[in-house]
Length: 343
Ligand code: ATP
Ligand code: FE
View 1 (cartoon, rainbow, N blue to C red):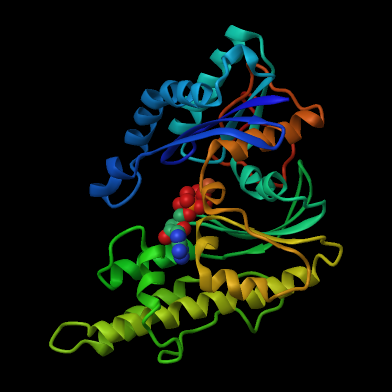
View 2 (cartoon, protein in one colour):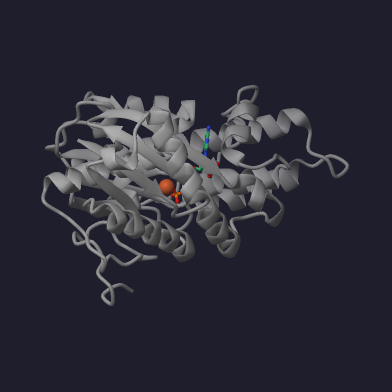
């Protein structure tokens, strides 16, 4: 079965062609440069860029795969959650393609795309525990099937990626902050600053990262010498901060696994899973197989959408012209959104 996947929910436009579990192409057009000078993603600019690029991305994905649109068996598209303009652009585009070709179309939840990726890259059986850690999300999910997600816990404020980005900003490092902080941390002493491990005293696997940011701010201000931060101190702050996040995630993962004793594997996805210190800490949490898909498939891409679409199709899900883009779409609601029923 060959699927065309389409993703446009944030600041990456992406199209992919998937044959079974083989990724024939996965084209990602990043808008980072467009938004850089605004210090964040501007929804209006993102929506316009998606409209301009969807066509080109799909064309590039098909030609890289050496296939035509008519060779596809179905089209999968992100129908939410995300920035409404971008999601709308993708859904409208997919509908037009489906209508023109008569191909079946299936709407996919973006987070389900992330959460099902381990089954694209590895032989992971249901149910498994998924820790989704990205710039916008941090949650533990029990994944019981392509349409069965139970949220066991998650952040009550910031996502870890967001914390990395904010800490980088506080320390005068460029964005995206995650890789920069990780690089700085390599020459730092992780024991120098004792940053908080929030919510460890609380039962369950909820997390909190906003206090960490404040602690970093305080450490920075206390360490200034003539208004400047010594390079070694900056490295030490990065290392201590990174270790605090890694330890907190690991401890809470242990608790999440206790809430999901039937799990066959412990999986992580999202940009933050690229961090080597965090990966190592998580790997040591359990004797279960640990699956962290390659970074290219952990960040936003259409191959994961095509895969989630294939899994949904196999269960008999199909969507028609009534498929509606949904800016908010909690993972634990199964049905694809219908026009007029969304929030
Ligand atoms: P979402 O998918 O939840 O909407 P997003 O698209 O911003 O959010 P991703 O693309 O999955 O998320 O990940 C980006 C985030 O990952 C950024 O916050 C970035 O700083 C962080 N990140 C990337 N690499 C690393 C790293 N090596 N260490 C820590 N954080 C990292
Ligand atoms: Fe994402």
